[in-house]
Length: 297
Image (cartoon, rainbow, N blue to C red; front, side, top):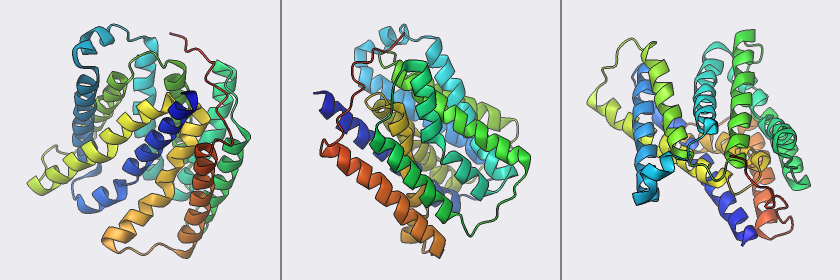
């Protein structure tokens, strides 16, 4: 039973990464200003997560809200912080810097999880994380480094936020966290509102932003929240790296934008590391050793 739950967690987190990887497709077709787009996306994605929570919990939705803890608020703030600092890292720094810094998130998560909840990552997770980091480095080898210190600092904060809320999701497995993730989307929308030049968008853009919020961000938050409870925190952030190679792949497949040679080679390295790890886990070669951990509430 524990191994089946572990495999389900792998599938859910991988699906979350694939949802997040569609970001390039949506942003290419939306002409609205950045913060206007993020404002509406936050509203749509937050509402999507609330609806999913109500459907999944049914009659238990209101009683479940009574089980919210301080950790739920912390997850909401950290998740929103990750979204906002991620935007800032790309806006004020180079994409290359942000990607390389963010690629270290499985290692940082492993450290946080070990010291906070005593969860040790498997060798397979650490090895796959190291190979994926190499792949990400190859992907951005042709890009420009040297972004501002502000951009680098925001990328570090984004990484710390992702690692922290992933550990909290794992630690508080008995606490309903979908309301917290909905709150994070609404917080991001609230923040973006004050920087948006106007919240008015065309019907075409509104349709695309709705898809962006529901299919890309909302679905990703739901799948990651449900899946990260079932697998070690470091493993969850490792699988989230599937977003990196698939983002340019979808743009190439549907929009015809040919990725660079470095993107192709680095993406293949990342995919080999992640799918190798997934196959290894599905075959049961590395059985999860973390199920005895009891979540603190």
